[in-house]
Image (cartoon, rainbow, N blue to C red):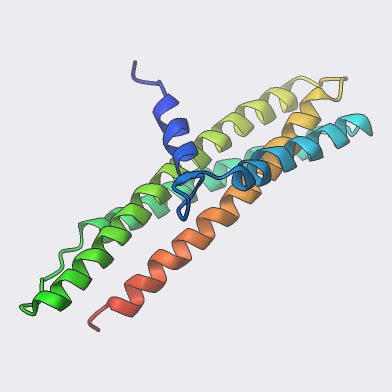
Length: 176
C-alpha cells in the first residue's frame, strides 16, 4: 500500500538502541515516550484546555516543520551522494572506509528519525486542524497535544545532536 508508514516507525524505533550493548535502550524509550506520557497525563489530570488560537499556532508550527525537515533530508542526501577518493595508503584507506561506514549508518538513522518526525508533524497537524475546526470540551485532545509536543521536541533534540555529529564530521573531513 502506498501510504503504509509502518516501515518508517519501525526504522525509527531501531535507532533507539544502545550501541555498546547492541540492544534496545530502555532509557531512550523512557525519555522519548514515558516522559511525554507523564506530561500528557499531568495535563489531563489538571484539566488543561487549549483555545482555538493554540490549535491555530500548532497548525502553523507543525506545517513549517514539515517543510524544514524535508529540506534537511535533501541536504543529507547530497552528503550521502558525495564521492570520496580512496587514498593509496592501505592504512589510511581502511580508516577512511570505517569513517564512511559510520557516516552512512548515521545518515540512515537520521533519515529514519526525520521521516518519523514528519509523521509526528502530520498527526499533530491533523489533530490541530480538527480541534481548530471543532471545539472539544474534554481534556483528552489537549493531553494528546501535550504528548505530541513533548515527544516532538525530545525527538528533535536527538535529531539535532545526530545532525551536529554528522555535519561536524563532514566539515572536519572536508579537504577544503
